[in-house]
Amino acid sequence: MDIDAEYFVFDDLSAGGLKITAKRYTTRSRVNNKGLTLLFAHCIGSHKEQWEPVIQRLFQFQETEAEVHRIREAWSFDWQSHGDAAVLNHNVLKDRTKCVSVYEWTPALAAFIRSSRIQGHRIVSLGHSAGAAAMMLTTKEIPPSTFAAMVLIEATMVTREVFNSELEDRMSAMDFAVAATSSRRDVWPSRDEAFRYFKKRIPWMVWDERVILLLTRYGLRELPGGGVTLKCERKMEAVSYPDTEPHFEAAIQLGNVCHAIPVHLIWGTRNDLVPEFIQDSLADVTEGRIVASVTKVKQAGHMVVQEQPDALAQAISDILVTIGPGSQIIADRSKL
Image 1 (cartoon, helix red, strand yellow):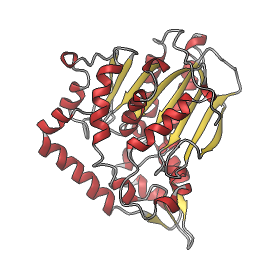
Image 2: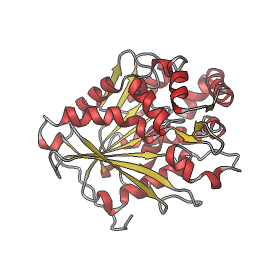
Image 3: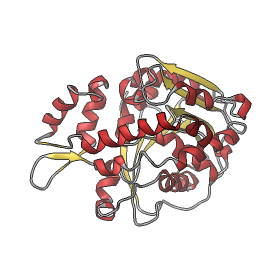
Image 4: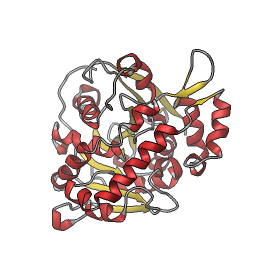
């Protein structure tokens, strides 16, 4: 199936002069205004194109489903400090010592969702890791009924109480992520050399090869003196990990949103970042968090989007076919 991708730059969604970049994916084979519009938010250190193998497979899976379960269109967004957005925002971000918080990404996503561009669409939001918190927090600004469903993939959302109950373990994991990110290599002579480097080293060596190719094509930028480097600068990625407040608030919000719309959780079977006690807490009915489903993707860890895109797409497809024909949104009529 041929998927068309259109590139967008939005400079009126984000505060502080920061731009948002996005891609819209559609297929020419069949226009379907009754289908689902999927919105994707990536994890820390990633970029919008890493979703493309998942998106491609989802279009294929849903093509044979009932009209209401097919995909009308899909959108994938770059965080302001990631991907193409990081390149466009470089001059604004270069002297910044603090991260671009999830609290800054969320309003931009909410502004897009409120816009006339997807007015009347049946929207399913999907977020991976920090992207899950960003999508959940949009429901602080817009009604949860805006969405037909939400899919949280390896969500790093956690209540403050659960986080503090295992504080030493959580701080150790966070410190490791910061240290590993801050010290890793970030310059290569060429994209081909970067690809060979990623193929031989953890964590990239366990990724699907298509995703590694997308990283070398879309996650790197040319340097003025030759060679390539990461679009998301490693210092900006590193300072994003300790930004825990949005994840605490998103966990609380989950307890409200799950009573208004179906919220689905997807995890990898290898608990290499989010421990089982946090996973269980996000589906703790005694705390009012009643989720619609919990799915485990085999042979995948926290980076399930990168490691098992086909299996993840199947898990998402199984969720999409459960969504009913209602849940169209009433958006404002502001132009993008």
